[in-house]
Length: 182
Length: 156
Image 1 (cartoon, rainbow over the protein chains, first blue to last red):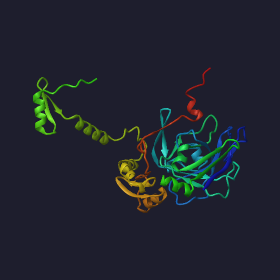
Image 2: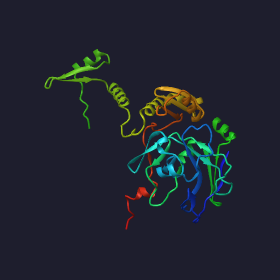
Image 3: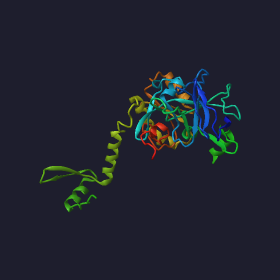
Image 4: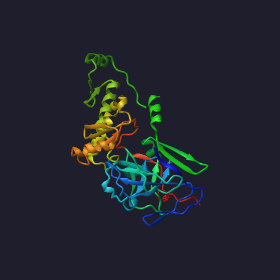
């Protein structure tokens, strides 16, 4: 199943993305995708859940990282609603890992924009998400979707460098069977 | 470096007579009692003590005790669960020491947990796959945001 269908990114400066009226700069070569965060285990997607941008960062070693202020203002969730599963250690400091589902929204094929009628895909994140205290300073930063989120959900990522496009899909059944047999 | 002292003939005979059980040795100068055990037995005891001690408080800060207990039960059972190929990449839910079930998705397990009325601070759902760290242990992450670099101003 296709999740990101030739999602575009730019090698040059592009207009900022607007989140809840706040303009957030996107740097060249940053892959912006659209996500939602919910408490873990919702039976099905609730279309009232806010959608906001995040950066796909395969160099990031964790699942998903967000600032507390973004979690409240963009995702519409108080951190206390998400259970603490453990901690992450960053530069010698400890921050909570909180249990959450991250939903990845499909894009309009060949564009950066979210597909309004698209059905998002739930990412199961066993280790939870990292919630940093306070606000991103000195400038707003977008939350990060790290490689571990894709790995844990057995997703297949391709980057077309020539066309500056990223595609993401779940494994099809033929591949699953072949891998199971091997 | 620790010096390995050689056993006296009397000590060797005492050990043999005890058939593997610990041998008590007294230091006549201080009247202090020592226990002589084989290196294998000592290693076993050391492992047990380590397990009993559990994780360091700093590592588990903020994790509700009910979740931590459930994580420990999951970690205890994981090697056994991994032996069964049918369980591989499935999810297991724990309420304290008790396994609630194994399922294809965490959602179906959480639904069962809610059906059983288990409090939200008392369960854990983990994935059955090889893991290098226990679920409660802090995960080391690279500094990524600009504000984390504020303590390190750029060189002039």
